[in-house]
Length: 171
Image (cartoon, rainbow, N blue to C red; front, side, top):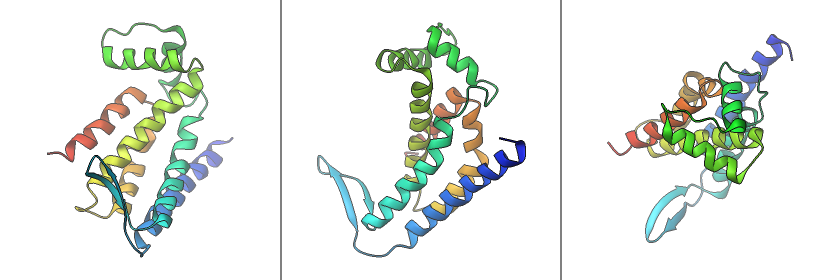
């Protein structure tokens, strides 16, 4: 894929996923709540809203999870770390997380894809929890244009940023 085609592909990802999130907010209808142990986990305006949000997340997660190991400055380092099970003393938590993932899934492409998917899902949960402060679609566009593309390079850091984003909702 040439540089121009790649750029067009990424712009399409931003546009399609943002439109899907926007359309899911416009959807009217009765509210559907998901409860666990008497606590409300989340609510959706309708099943259509939930489907649109799920498709938007798939549009975002798919290219990030199935990228080439040549994509991004650090991706090959994470691939080698996953495959060779090399100890990184400066980030014990991430090393243990990758070691656990490697025991479950031996293929580094799938394992790092799951880590990338976790990053996007946790980030979305953080945005979802802040939806009363601003429009979800506007926050999603901001996330896509400012943070998402760093996930292609800095897997470990973006996973931490995702959890900080969720933690910010508790402040």
